[in-house]
Image (cartoon, rainbow, N blue to C red):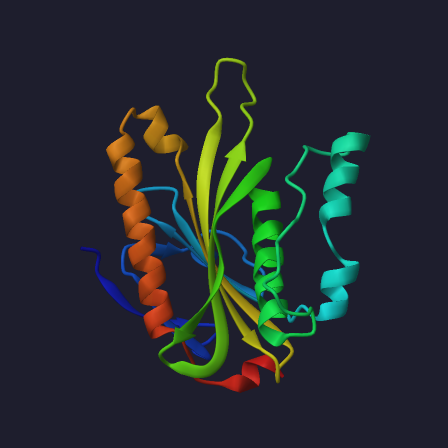
Length: 222
């Protein structure tokens, strides 16, 4: 089993347990102020934590990336992407949980759109409880990302993305933590079991983040 330890994030305002063998990307290159990024010392698996403006209902309705994806595929401005779509539960869009589920799918779409050419949500967003933030709504989701081969002899590359969304309505903030596991290095090595082990490890990492995630200074969001 992997070893985890508490990691101060954003100057200690947030704390979460992360694998001790993960490297801080900011020690290697510049990272945006709203982001903390870590990468495995032995694989290409990465963990990112971001602080973003909270998506509201108006943004979800007006900023639907489906049209952006359609424009990209028809104008040649970039690679075709999977249009954003997510079926809300049997509630109105004014329902808080329905909006949150929609926001989780929206965030997942934006991550996957950057990471590959197409994606499929394999675990739809679901409401969870954070042990150290009992009154804060949080959601988990997972997607499979596919990137087309750039070389005719190359295989299609796949990755998985696990997303944790934490919604701070009073602070107008969405915190997202996501783990990306590229499969290409394992495919190239001809070791499918290694990919399965890394996926199991990613599940363990996310479980530890969920269990340990704590906000110690809400002044970070002012």
